Length: 256
Ligand SMILES: C[S@@+](CC[C@H](N)C(=O)[O-])C[C@H]1O[C@@H](n2cnc3c(N)ncnc32)[C@H](O)[C@@H]1O
Image (cartoon, rainbow, N blue to C red):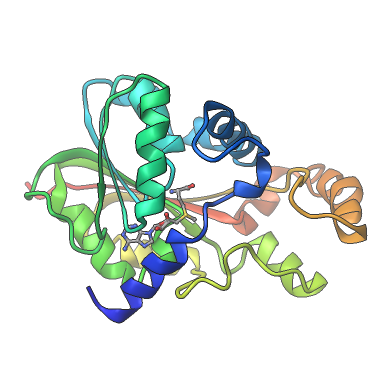
């Protein structure tokens, strides 16, 4: 593995996404339940755009599965799930998460830019919040394409350079979460579409609009929660959709 990927692995071995949102001990049921509740409060759009229940009996691979919160949802919906993450810390926790929920998964430490699965293995590849942190996004997307079966779907999420959160962060001089990671890239809708050029039926859907934050404190958080969130959400979604912070990208492998 090259040096950049080693740095990425090291960074994510020492951090667990959203960990500050729980007081429960690491790896306990309370810990996983708190992080799951926080995730779907913040990403309230996600179950609406990813139908976790619709993959029953299908083989789903998650690249950069972290502690396995979304993968648990796929598994609860009946999918046969595999999760890969560069970070040993994340995979160890994902194993505990699945065990505590009495669910089965094949969970492995691995690099999403060089997957150890044969061609045409999965019905779906899911990569949420990973493409922007990896060393070579093109390689990760190529690998996703390779391991998908014909007719399989790719579902990815990366951050929108033109998103409202990036604008707020510059204006109020508040760091974006994990902008200190060894790789942290923001992209436009056009760039994401280009990355997905191998796929058919590509669509990019901006999502993740402001919701009240429990993460930040102080007057900036007060202003954000009491003024900005309410005001922003009064504006018709169609007018502001292009500024959604998360770009959800979808594509179908069709090599017939
Ligand atoms: C922000 S976390 C997101 C975790 C999870 N997908 C979520 O949405 O909560 C980013 C994850 O991507 C993983 N990651 C980054 N580059 C990777 C790569 N090349 N292969 C596998 N995992 C990678 C990191 O180890 C980390 O666990």
